[in-house]
Length: 179
Image (cartoon, rainbow, N blue to C red; front, side):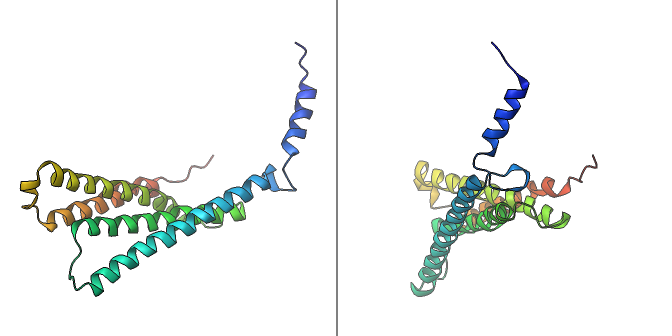
């Protein structure tokens, strides 16, 4: 097997240059455009879809004559809020970062973005867990489920919020290293 480092490095430069159009640090612009388009679609679908769900819950509550939401609607409300947090604090900063190819915020904004990137998924997971506990109680113990008040469901959702807010703190507590 005849292997030459000179030929290998020349071939690597030629292969690397394919699809790279005068970009800084070898960024593949075609790939970047595809990623930007996909992130924009994900962001728009998430915002429009969850805003529609929130609007539907608001109109149901306002015009159906109901003063409070049912347990499932309460869980859906908070799950939609968690998804919107994910869209605005994870997808949107990533979209801006991909468009500019640089993070434009300072140290404080970096910490806010890093906190928000974990907040949405944590919150969404914990609210889904609270929903699963509520549904488990309703399906497996239907006679005792009636004794569960909506207050228990609210407590589970508020605990999900507190756990998500608490468990995201390590993202902002780490100091930058100087190396």
